[in-house]
Amino acid sequence: MTLIFRKETPADYKFVEKIIEEAFANEAYSDQTEHLLVARLRNSDAFIPELSMVAEVNGEIVGHILLTKITIKNAEITSASLALAPVSVKPAFQKQGIGGMLIEEAHRIARPLGYRSIVLLGHAGYYPRFGYRKGSDFGISLPFEVPDENCMVLELVEGGLEGVRGEVVYSEEFG
Ligand SMILES: CC(C)(COP(=O)(O)OP(=O)(O)OC[C@H]1O[C@@H](n2cnc3c(N)ncnc32)[C@H](O)[C@@H]1OP(=O)(O)O)[C@@H](O)C(=O)NCCC(=O)NCCS
Image (cartoon, rainbow, N blue to C red; front, top):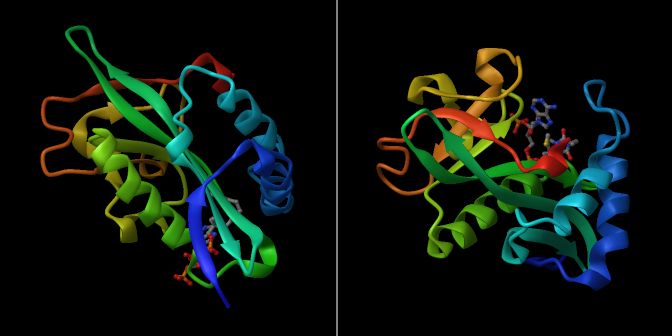
């Protein structure tokens, strides 16, 4: 089996959207529109082409991850950050580490682009293994009500959230 991770290209778009639909099809909390969110974000100012990445097994796309620009804002300061949303692995390929490798690859590409942190809304049992901690530990919150443990943040570099606190401002494409 050959597993590679690479930047998504326009030729991948329809295959990626199908993977996203399949991945979220049976998720109770999902409204099954994540593929439409990705399509909107690709056309937005928040899009960073290098941070829309696919996992390919023997030439077939089986996973995707998207990190887009957000800011974290309080009365004094607005700081640049990234939102991780969504990450998807085709059901038949789940639980083989591909999701985790996509997350680590996205971190690796984001650092030299100058990004210092990532925020996500996700399962509290999954992301801490990649270094994510509760946003509330850093004084960072989402602009809607979620259980405290589901707002998670990562410092991509040491001190990446030093002096950063406030509420996440998503691009309007998040809707
Ligand atoms: C989340 C997802 C990307 C993980 O991909 P994957 O390739 O299966 O991930 P890995 O093999 O690296 O890790 C599997 C681990 O993730 C855990 N996991 C997957 N989905 C989970 C969920 N909904 N809640 C809690 N843990 C979950 C598995 O239990 C497993 O944990 P274990 O190692 O302790 O057994 C994949 O399950 C998926 O596409 N899910 C549907 C879409 C989704 O919910 N995306 C995340 C929200 S944006």
